[in-house]
Length: 471
Image 1 (spheres, one colour):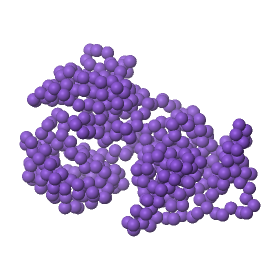
Image 2: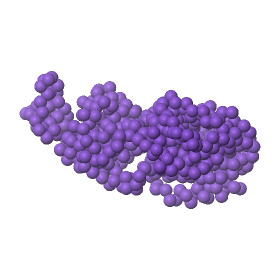
Image 3: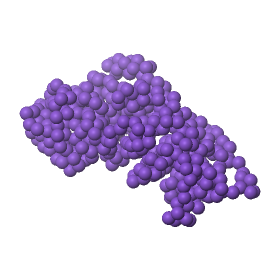
Image 4: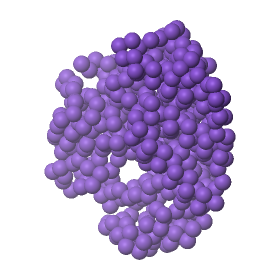
C-alpha cells in the first residue's frame, strides 16, 4: 500500500501551489529488478498512459530510466494548472495506475514539485511581482502575441491567444494588434497569425466559451487627412520631425498609412501599439537599431519605463531567450541600465526541458530533456555548473550543441566547449562541466562502456574562485 502514502504526500505538497501555476512533478520510483520496465510497458500497452496524456491540461506524462539506477524509474508529468492536475486525480486512471504500481511493487523514493514558468534566477519574487503589477494582464497578452507573431511560432501563439483572451483581451484588440504588425513583420506573418486567431476563436466557441468581442475602431471623418495626421503622430513618436528623403514613397507610406491610417484606429491606444511594436521587433534578428528607436518612441507615446523594464522577463518566460536578450540590450542603450550581453540558445532546436531533478548537485539552474537512444540534453543557465563528480564503471560522453561552456578535470586546466566539441570522460576521473558566465550552454550526454555496478559519485561544489579562473 505504499502508493497511498505517496499520494498523501503529493496532496499535501500541492496545497501550497497557486491554483494558476503550471506544475511539474518528478517522482523517483524503486522497483524489483526488471519490474519498472514491465510497469511502463503495461501502462503504454493498456492505454492508461495515453488516456492520462489526453486529460485536458496535461502537458507531458513521460517515463525515464535513470542512468544511476537501471532498475529505477523517473516519472515527469507537467500540468497547465492545479485544475488540470485535479482532473487527473478525479479520473479512473489515477486508481488504474496505482493498481499497476502495486502489481509491480513500485515505491516512491523522491518527490519534487515546482512551477517551471516562475522565474528562478536572482531575486525571483521581485521579478515576478514587477512583471505582474507593472504590466496589466491585457498588456502582457498584447506583448506576448506580438512577439510570437513576429517569431512565426504558431503553436506558441495559439496558446498565448487563449491565455490573452481568458485574461481580458478582446477579440477586436487581438485582431487589431495582429493586423498592425503586417507593417513591421510583413503580410505572411500577419496573415498566419490572424488565421491562428480564427482557429482559436472557433475552438473556444465550440467549447462554449464566450469571448468579449470588444469595440471596433470608430469611423474616420470624411475629411480626414491621413498624411497630415500621420506626420503629427510620427513626430510625437520620434520626438522630432522625420523625413525619409532617400525613398519618398516609403516616407509617404510611413506617414500616411502606418501612422495616419493604422494608428488612427482607436481600438488600441498609441501606447498599446508601441507595446505591440517593441515586443514584435524584439523577435526580429538584425533589427536592433529599429528596436532602440521604438523603445524611445514607446516612452514618447506614454509607455512607462517600468512597463518597458518588465517586458524582457515576460518575453523570456513566454517567447524565448533571444527575444528577451535583444530587448534588454535596447533598454540598456535607451535607459542606461547596466547590462551584460549574454549568448542565448534556441530551445526550438534543442528543447530546454524541465528543471533538473538532480538540481541539488548543481550551482545555478539546469534543465533536463531525455531523448531517444539513452541520450539526455542538459541545459545550463549562464554561470551554472555541476559539482565535482566521478563516474564509476562507465565512460561519460559530452557533446556541446549550443552556447559556450567549460569542462575541467581535477588538477588540469579548464577546457572550453563550443558547438561540436566532444569529450569522452574516462571512468574514475574527478571532473565538472557547466556554462560560461555569459552564455547559456547545452550539451548532450550519454554513457558507454558501462560495467555492472556502475554509479555516479557526487562531490563538493566548484568554488566561485576556481570557476572564475576558467579561461
